[in-house]
Every structure is written in structure tokens, then in C-alpha cells.
Length: 256
Image 1 (cartoon, one colour):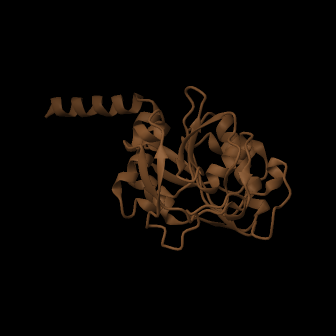
Image 2 (cartoon, rainbow, N blue to C red):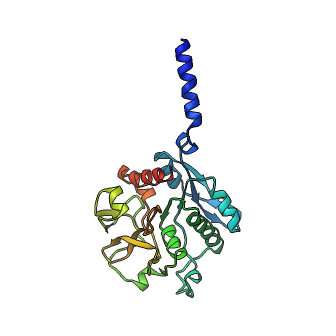
Image 3 (spheres, rainbow, N blue to C red):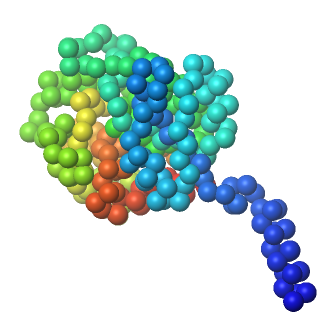
């Protein structure tokens, strides 16, 4: 009995002495949408995907300056940028193309502060849909403002079907992180976007495209930086296909 107590005490001491990242689950800061400047708004699909992948989701609060964003991100292990309305084209030096462009200047401000802070802090980043578009712009790229008009295609990029239904295929580079995670160079994805990457940032490598050429994924070309951006919504697809959890598990593992 005494030996068991000693072993138990030693185990507690060992666990206590482990680095914090070995003792706790990774905390993932998730950038939400907003209803005005007073309310945050986030679909639970994002938090569910992180929980199922072994992480702890933390909804990032609204901030108005870079120092606040950086201070908050010191307490998380990874950042997820989520879907939402269009990004203001002023951020990549263009005027609004037409009446279909719907922007939220408050969200643009907050999301960009967090995106820049995540880059500066070298945190793992998973960017989804609008998040993919925003990170490309933050890194110096540009967007198609109205995809159906500026790049007409037979693919319906804003599908009418529910988001759980994958509606078109994408080709994935065999040299990419996405290929290593998912294990396939052809994936069937959902499509719920109005804008898309036009000129990729020189700091990223495009790793997946739809059959019409639209960018569907990219990653950082800087060695040692974990950045994966996807145009589709894997957090919705995991509700009907567990294989997409591999993407979130890889993200949470990188955050660990």
C-alpha cells in the first residue's frame, strides 16, 4: 500500500513537471462573425469539429487594436479563421465591383488584427472560406469580388444544396500538406462562397484547385510555418463524413 502511494505521488510530480502543452489540450482561438458591434455569432460546427479533434475551442473576443489581439493570442495555441460575408476590396486596392459585394467593416478590422497577430506569433492557422480569402489578402494577394461574373464556370460555387452535401471535386497536389492529411489527390467538397482567391500571395503555395481553376486550398511556403487555408467548409462535412476530422486533428496536433 505504501509503495502504491509513493508511485502515485511520483506520477503526480512527473505530470506537474511536464511542460504545459503536454499537460493540457491545445486551445484553439476561433474568430466569430458579428451581429453589429455588440454580439458575436458562430455556428457550432466549428467548435464541434475542434472538440471532436481533441482541442478546446475558445471564441475570440472583439478587439480594436493590435496589442490587444497579440495579448489574447498569447493564451491560445492555434487560430481558426471562419466563413462569413465578403472582404472589403479596399484592403487589396480595389473599389467595390458591383452590388453583390456584401462587406462588414467591423469584422474586417477584427479579423485582420487577429490574422496579423497569428502570423507574428507564428501560431498554427486553419483558415476556412472567408478565412482563406482574408489570409490571402493579409499576405499580399487579391480576390475575385464576384466569382460568377469575373470567372464564369459550370461549377456552382455557391451551391443550392445543404452544406453537408459535397457538390464538386478538387484536385490536390501530391506535394501538399492537404494530400498528406487526407491521403487523396481528388476530394469532393461543398461550395458556399461568393468570392475566391484571384492573385495568390507570394508567401503561399496553391495546393488544390477546382476543375475550373478556382483556388480551393493553399499553404504557407515558409518552412516551419503551419498555415492551411481551404475554400470549402470541412467543419460542415465532418457531420456526415468522419474522414474530414483528419484535417482538424492535424491542426490540433500542430497546435499541441
